[in-house]
Length: 137
Image (spheres, rainbow, N blue to C red):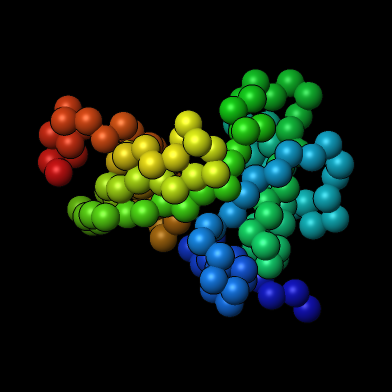
C-alpha cells in the first residue's frame, strides 16, 4: 500500500530528504490512475498530492476552464511568521519562497475559515497597511 499523507503534512522529499517545498502542480491532459478529486467551481481534476513522494499534484483542466493561472502553478513554500487564531478564523502573515522569480518573496496575509475541522474558505491578500488594519495585525 502507498504511503498516504494528509493535506497538512509535507511530502516525503521534504520530511526525509530535506527538500524545501510542499508540492508542485503539474498540468496534464491525461487522466491519472488515482484521479478522484474534481474541483467543480475551478473545473479541474487533481490527483497525486497525498501519494507522491516528490510532492507532485497532477492537474487536469476541463476544456472550458478559464483559470489559466493554474497552468503556471510553481513550486513554492509558504513561510508563516505570524499565526493568529480567532475563533474559527486562522490568519497567517508571511511570505512565499517560490521557483518563479516574479512571485518569489512576496509578502502576503492568508486567511482561512475552518468549518467542521476543514478549511471552508481560503483567501490570500497583499500584505499592505490597509489589510493589516483590516485583520488587526
